[in-house]
Length: 232
Image 1: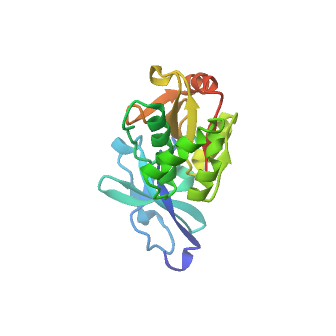
Image 2: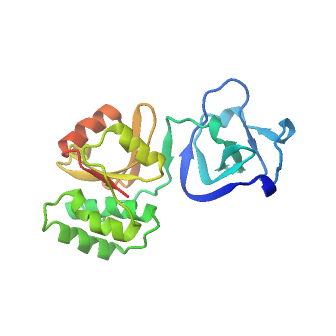
């Protein structure tokens, strides 16, 4: 973006949705513009306006923040001001736990969390650390040393509110939550990866899929899990 580029940031990938605004949604099909005019804007087709756009880079130019997106064969730059503030979903691949054991459930949720930060920890090393933590209280916070060593940060979200969870997700950091009653399990870990006005998205180690749950039901299951949550 030549002389008008002030900042550029490669980012962990995430999905956004467009705001419901009057007029046509548009994007820049190139990043070589020094001054954006109406002829530089490409109209977004109506049939994809309500879809999720994958973001992989953030830049500041022409006095605006821009998100670089891909959607099928389309790619370009969306102005941040046209993005919903009430939706965010992180691009974290779901993993399915190897067995039905609690330890494999916990390790799978934590492995997704750590891998999202760029950690290359092995499944065996992670399992050993989780098994050692069970010698303490068995709470998520007991894993602080492991998470700090792999991500260089820690965020204790025990008894946090949903605004705090949303803020963490907006920072592109998924959250491991201990729940009870999800999948008819007495206790399990899930990985929160996103939210919108009414729903939360999560990777479920039990099913190995991206799932969704209403905020009310998540509150109920999280409360049964003693409101434990942790991130980095």
